[in-house]
Length: 147
Ligand SMILES: [Zn+2]
Image (cartoon, rainbow, N blue to C red; front, side, top):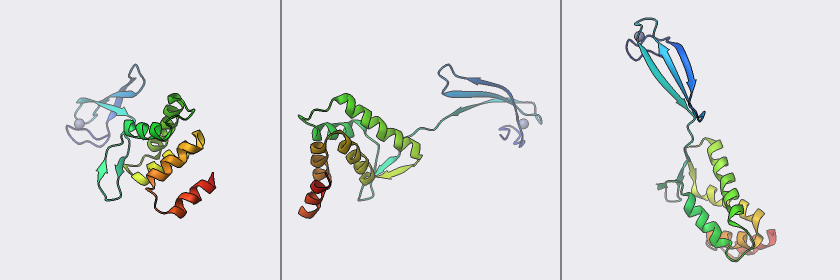
């Protein structure tokens, strides 16, 4: 790393220390050119991608909103909130692992549908029908046939 004082290209790490939680690495660096010291912090960048809607507008990933729409689809179905949360965690994990800065809302919808399909077929059809806002009777009956 470049020295912030004299812009010397090659500074040396004098000390490396992990935070107690292990999520931040702190390094003391020394510049061999000007002998100044500075600290850098290294942490994983785990940010949810922004959601891009059909009209091009962006919004933040909203876990509660997705959770609410999933539980609405699962109303009166024999699926526990623990199962919903586990499904949500899988979706979040995939999003984080993708490293993408933004993702189409349609993609999120597909991920939710895939998880619902595994949890409960009725909830899946409910969600899919609302989500795709009945783009056609054919679409809906094709969905039902898929199950
Ligand atoms: Zn320097």
